[in-house]
Image (cartoon, rainbow, N blue to C red; front, side, top):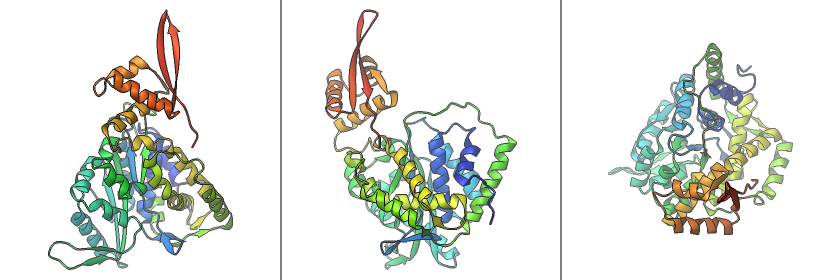
Length: 394
């Protein structure tokens, strides 16, 4: 049926949120995740003997006070998703496996096809993280649930039960520190990091003290709700046309060529091909109802993910096997954010956690890794040491 959002749901969502301070990056991925929560496991693509569903584990990551990430999520969840889908199970608060199982069972009982579809909304990821790391098996369970296959569980003093058709979406806000509340081995080794979409922001994009909705935004909101409701009714498999197949295959053959060597991103890259297909499905339904993936959808998905990859190391900067490595990440990200910064300014910024000798060792490591370069400048008779970030194309 004809859509209200003539330029597509995602583009109209960006226009709708433009007067608000959160960056376009956060609003874009909130819109993508909102569609994922709407599609649930009602649509899929047949792939490698399996069915890939468009559910996502999306986490908006920035330093505290940067990007209004919680507000960005609430706009998508409260103003759009809840109004378009009032019956959708949206879970909040501290997460435990019994609590999630309860939500899945309730969702399953209300659905005639026994679909256990739940969206986890965490405006503060530290609340989620407390549950995730107090329950040693929770991360593994969330990793298993990502693929939407049958999920076996056993509650205390109960026999083994199965949720046959689960579908979990996550939309959360985090700082790099909260993202890694547990150990690095838990986060990386368990495979959870390869399932999340870390949408990282280094600094604010704009400054709007008092965002105001006009009638224009209200009309855009109404159209978004109508379109999302339309999207929620789509069912069935996607068709990937021949040009899209070829484009995907050509990319897959050379996909390792431009990968970031940071080992914390290895899991992300290992699952990137699946993520490309998930995002392509979402981009397709953002515009029309035909459940067809074209070359443009694959190309646009790769472009969106390519932009994310520039800042994923910032999202993972707390994932380290030693404190010195965490400090190195902090220094590296500060230089990357500022593009160039003086030695004295850098030392002043980190005086609370490292000495001058500590900083010198970290700077030498970054120089040896060819991540930064330096220049000596003379200003008003005084010499100044300046570090510059070396841009690398994804």
